[in-house]
Amino acid sequence: MVTKVISADHAVAWAARLARAEVIPAFPITPQTLIMELLSEFINDGELDAELIAAESEHSVMSIAVGASAGGVRTFTASSSQGLALMHEMLYVAPQVRLPVVMANVNRSLGAASGIWLEHNDSMPERESGWLQCYVEDNQEALDMVLQAFRIAEDQRVMLPVMVCLDGFVLSHTVERVEIPGQEEADSFLPRFRPLNRLDTEDPRVINPIVPPEYAMEMRYQLDRAMDASRAVVGEVDELFGRAFGRRYGGLLEPYLMEDAEYALLSLGTATTTARAVVDELRSQGSRAGLIKLRFMRPFPENELREAARGLRALGVFDRSIAMNGLGPVFTEVRGALGSTGIALSDHIGGLGGRDLTLQEMRDVYASIGSSAAGQATVRWHGLRGEQG
Image (tube, rainbow, N blue to C red; front, top):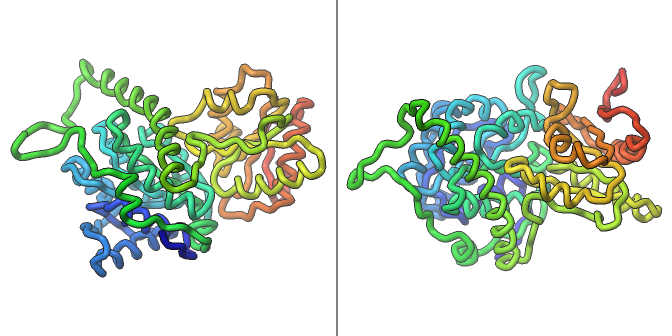
């Protein structure tokens, strides 16, 4: 193991190197380009035996990834924002064909108002595509989750692609201390890829044909069951990773100071770090505040969330995107899971377009969660200039 001070983008590239990715289709887009640049250096310097294929667009990137994975090789790529949107058509192929591609998505705002800064509105619309979706909090978790993602995706109970999402610029272009495992350690944790089905000239087969109604519904059902099976695999891999490297993340979600909490916030990504600091502050003042770090949007941890929220009077949800239904997408999922529990639920939207999420705004979030138990507004925008939400 070595320790480096690196960005999350470089941490992801190191993870793909340690995973011995064999085919890496690439197209540059801010803020993920640093990943592919470092991987190209690894390959050029003979430190990674892989084929980096420069594609003409992100649609082509995912097309290449689908073909490579179907050919039985470990495949990695990365994208962001408009690039992920351009992949949309091909994103739906990999899950239904059961191809365990791993992709890092460096979250960035999408569409007008055009920007290159952080939002989750690029990846959230893809949560129904059949990809597992994990959101990381810091640079170390970015590296660790790419390694875990290959182990999860390639488990024969799952065989689905995994999208590891990291906050653009907040993580991708800032540096932190990151422990990088040795290659032997990584090899011990992540065995060689054993394809479930693969294109082979010695054993011809058809993959992804036109499917008539007589079979299409059953294929969708199998995909749904594989996503459900991934719940247990995520937990198992997290435990195995903890034994191997001494770091565990809780699987689908991670409760923080929830044992006696009266009210709490559910967050994902880097907002969790800010929320944790405020929870510590509130606890020092005698307030029974808690925090639930949501790690996976797919599969969504309904049962684990109900258990973590047991005993709460109020739960707030932090959304860094909007669902155009007056609420955020994370809140919509949480309300579906907890709507019948009697817990007062509130949605808190902020940090859109890359706007800073300050400690004071997070304090306001927690103050608002407490008041939501008294029947106040279900949704509130934080840090909004002009009219207040």
